[in-house]
Image (cartoon, rainbow, N blue to C red):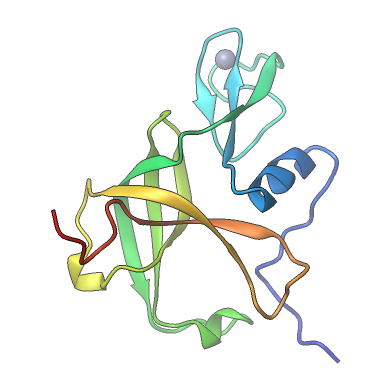
Length: 145
Ligand SMILES: [Zn+2]
C-alpha cells in the first residue's frame, strides 16, 4: 500500500502541455494576446483583462528571488522526509510571480533579488510522476565569479 501523497498534481487536458514541456525541461507560461500580460499558474483566461485569447509561451527560465521560507516541519507526505527545504516565491523574467522551491543553495546564502534559473526535478519515489520546476542560483552557488 502506498501512502497518500500531497505533492502530485492532477493533470488534465488543459494543463497537459505544461507538464509535457516540463518533462522536456521547458517552463511554459501563458500570455494574453489582447493585453500582452504573461501569467502563471496557467489559466484559460487572462487574469488582467479576462480575455480568453491566451496562449502557451516558453519562458526563459530566468527568475529573481522575491521571498522565501525555510520549512523545518511538514506533516504531509512526502514533504516530511524532505525537510529542511526552501519554499520560495520567484519573479520570472517575463513578469509572473511563481511559487516554487529553491534548491542547491544554503539558506544563509539566500538573498532577495538573487538570480535564479529553473531546473526540473523528478521524484525518485514517483519516477513516473511529473517533472516539477524548481530554481537554483545562477550562477550556481560556490562557483567562482
Ligand atoms: Zn489580457
